Length: 178
Image (cartoon, rainbow, N blue to C red; front, side):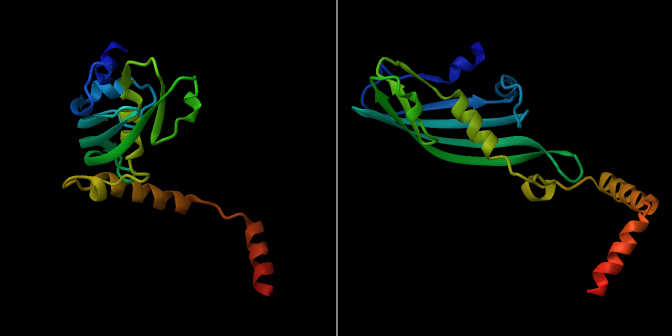
């Protein structure tokens, strides 16, 4: 967990105004999260923290590549990622941390640093497409034709050996009579 301390910003000593921070995100970052969708990647997070009297505005821009697995051929490929998000950090004297949302984080008045670890992790994992395909998300990547052909052949063999239950034929006759 000490590795993740580098993704914290101590904001108490900062003057009012904008401050720029950069973070490197690689496989070591993702290994800290046991159930991460992304296991490999090489990204940079540029963070602009705008400290104001009563709140902070944090603009996060994450760019780079992440390793995905193709849902068709199971091949690993690099996919470019470009994420731009904005966070608003508010301060409260009470323990009303439940008021936090996806865009607003509420910290106690006595907090002295902003931990961006989970925020960066969530932004990256949410950017992963629901359906990964070499040819759509990859950079000059193509599906492994050998694997695709092997899967097609297995599918054909399975259909050929599939036995049709005679009860379905009777039900089809009933359906066609209507």
